[in-house]
Length: 194
Image (cartoon, rainbow, N blue to C red; front, side):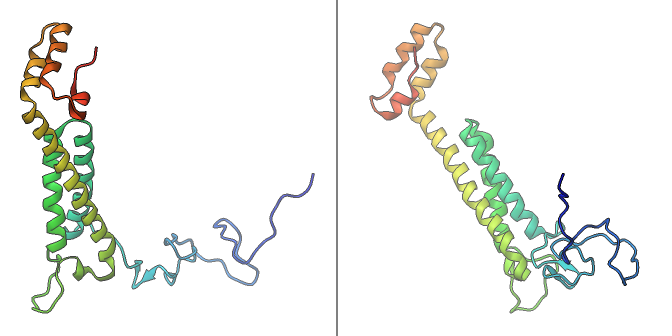
């Protein structure tokens, strides 16, 4: 049976391997992400002790609101699609508020200088993912509100049909409610099937 071990390479990153010859043992240190596992904090993703320029700070209200906007907008859109427009409208309105306040808000450690950047611009390079989250939250919030409003408009426009369908006691009475719908695409979608 042939030997299936790979030849040792200088970039071998086995944390359990013995140190190379001529190098003393070192105490174990946890790895930092993105720097190849050397543990010294000088990798390309490190800048001043942080792991890259775009680190999420949960104590910053701007970043928190950007994430809230994305999550609330996404769930509002799903509730709108699944036919629960009231929850979709509520989450869409919250996402719209959080997204706008994230884009216009002041950072947690705001300086009182009149020329200082405000909003997500004050975060510098870390603003890009937060701006993307806030804008995505605004888009999904707009879609959630649009779905909820179209659902309410449809129920208002065809109120007679919905009242007739809800009050029908038998299947034949429910089928008679189809006469209250227009003979177009909306009527074909809403009509009661046999």
